Image (cartoon, rainbow, N blue to C red; front, side):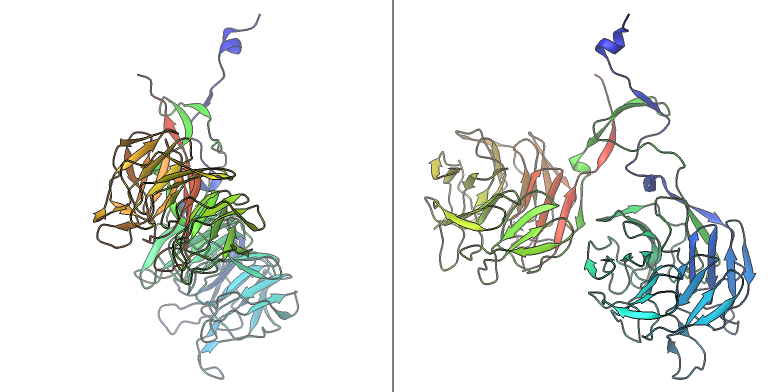
Length: 611
């Protein structure tokens, strides 16, 4: 006979601890055996925290030989054969038993004086040999790969350079440069055909696909001379300088974005970093030495849980440690903004559409009332076909592949409407009232909603688009210019805006036929971005009462507004996009910036309460 729970209930898993997004989230740094010699700016590499080698660097007292080498087996450091050359500010690739040291500075009276070299040295597990030199003098570069298939990039020679060279086990060959010349990289991640260059001076992030570099999302805390570990899709950036102070921050890269994880115990820079061949998701990252308050011999090892339960949205479980039932959900108030990739053309006054921050479209804008359209896939902006008519301060709605652009201004206010089919724009029926700085909303094209604006004077007028033509519907209770709008032409919330003679906080709900005043927003502002629906909305950025750019983000839960995480860059006069309050994008803005920010509400575990 079937059991009652099998008919009416469901099984709930019992866990000793909460679930996490990835194994990296369980990571922490632990102290390990110190090196025999405290040092800074040493050269290190390894394939795991139990297979690591470090050489050279600055020691105390200054007269000490800078070629001393130590090897780590996971338990202790052992002094081994000295490197043939005194060296500092170098980088290594390979493992602790088969490595290559290059991109370093000779600190003694060498030909040409103190500075970067082209020399390369190889370690076979017991002794060093000098092998063929690089083509470009450099120090403080990034590295990736092994002793038979390696890569070196950037560095100073003596100023920052973008040069990249590939190693085939015998010779170095010049290949495609980094997009941005940089130095003080502090190592790299990955292999010869798939590498990551992160932090440094400047603190850009680029991915290598074996033939070219692509700029991707920048690290949250800019730094230089940091340690690295992992692969080009799973990496750690460890400690470093920012720019003259030392930071303990550690961030993990998941292939598209950076997230802060557990800090190291001692903030320091110029560390001996981990191998580019390690994995950020395993217990095999290590940093040793470096400089904080003083030269250090300290070693720290990154350790992750040997077993973990991955977080899954909507899962319900019983936490036996806290004696509580929990559910995994996305909490909008816990969301954050993260840096994305810059637009190709800096601008404000553009229209936007898109459901998520990895599928968006931006079109038009200033300066010059341009027609430029760019499409975003989460890792890069690509220019696609232009609007038929260039303009700024226009409305936009829809998705990345089906969007509507309407209103705006060029020589004057326009009523022009254009439809995007995923590859090109086509002119369709105009608005009834030409206007600019209007609010626009709808989750899908070709239906749409145009609210308020300026044309001429502050507008209360509202128009609804059915896919063919615009129809005037009930006006708002309060005329407003540049309001925020979330939702569609059936249900929406409109808030903020500029009303002669000032900026306001008023909000109104639309039910498909009429407007009703509801709870005010916390900060009066206008001409910012909005995302979401009428019961779960975000507004962000804009211009405040003082006439300055605002960075605040507010969340609407259907009854009240709550201030949540601010934008990194305060800005206004730009449209935002996102079909939900858990996933939005804001790119460009006043004064003609190119920066992109992506809003994400992370999955978190919440206790289920019964009352």
